[in-house]
Length: 243
Image 1 (tube, one colour):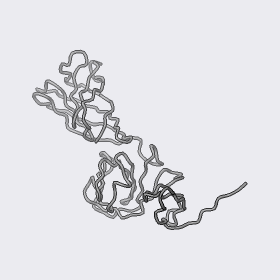
Image 2 (cartoon, rainbow, N blue to C red):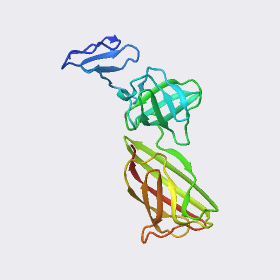
Image 3 (cartoon, one colour):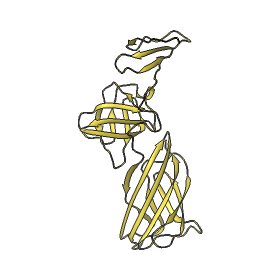
Image 4 (cartoon, helix red, strand yellow):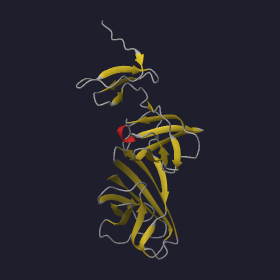
């Protein structure tokens, strides 16, 4: 049985036209390839995480600064993890030349501290990545106001597709009328989108959600009328695209 032996080395020079070079990166020990455009692709990452091997720094609670050329490495929907005392996990939701915009819902935020142990992943389920992220919001109504209401949800992202589950709990309806308005964890790309749900607290009525921009208008599926009331739990779920 013949064997192929690869020597550890730093990234080679860009190969000539029509050629691709395969090598073992001397710092990460990951088998990688470099094509004639200078693109480097890592292979055989057993846990799904690729070492970033670059400096990341705090910019805000939802952004980090990275070296120039981020758009040639990272994409919307990629997953990243790093350590700030403990491990943190995020989706990338926007990429600029030197800035990544992240979301970890309400589970993780970037703090003004050193970022270490930096990794990214383009796989669906790298080891340790959360199955979903939580978020919260304050529901409103098309007309009038709620006396007491809360909003929460969960989401996952695959590429530019986001799946969201939203719960609006109305303790006291007050003068709220028209549509119940829930809010999204990430703005939607051009829509609109229609999602469905159910009132789970009192009536069991089937719901319709008109999703666009950064919100969902929730009403009765049967006739589009108002669906709120004291003790109502409005649960809607569906998918939409992000920009």
